Image (cartoon, rainbow, N blue to C red; front, side, top):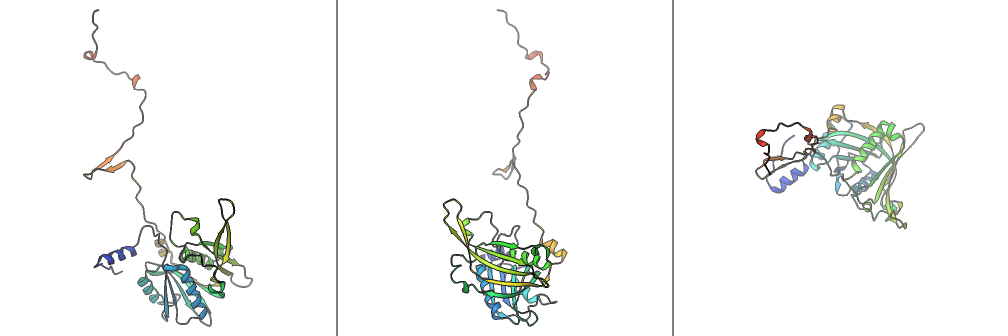
Length: 297
């Protein structure tokens, strides 16, 4: 990969912000784009999902005929866009006769395609159709994520859907969170479909806090959209060697206790010795010169 050199202070800060870190706390920037052919349903759906992500979404409006993640060489343009936008995930909308209203979600590792999965969308309802139920929810806030159904653990495609969707919508990694900051919930429910693949219901609810007379408030959920159902299509998992490299964690040096540095950059340490007992029982030799002479009264 080409290493860029910053010529200005602002450019140096921008490159430092994009550099890899030991712990990535920022949410993944998601690339929202369309393929060669798209539909009105996918355009409105991608607009709603980008609105849900807030500033962590990079939306592209033009058609991209060369983006085909499941074909050899079809991910080149996608990886180029990811590097330009510093994106870690993507949402791609394509519409074909064989796969109508197909929403592809995936992730990148070092700006190369890591994994992806297709979701065939049906029964879509936009955020506008629910009125102002979600007006109190802040765009880009950290949502509650709930995946219901055993198919998310047993079905290969839905297991990948759960992993990718959690990575896209989880937001920033934080140590603590204010209860008032949780203002929406994303619920995915997998339903059994005899004779076909499982059907997943994607719903987003606004969380409203009501007075209950106690310390814990009363919670009410109001559907705010977007709302759609989908079935899992093709999926592509990462190769084992790439997955092993991507899942590695940086080693963090352990904190050295009782060690400090002085003004001369010298290392100063403290030693704590336990109280020693039994020294009075030791038979120490007494020298004659140390004895006191008896004086006559």
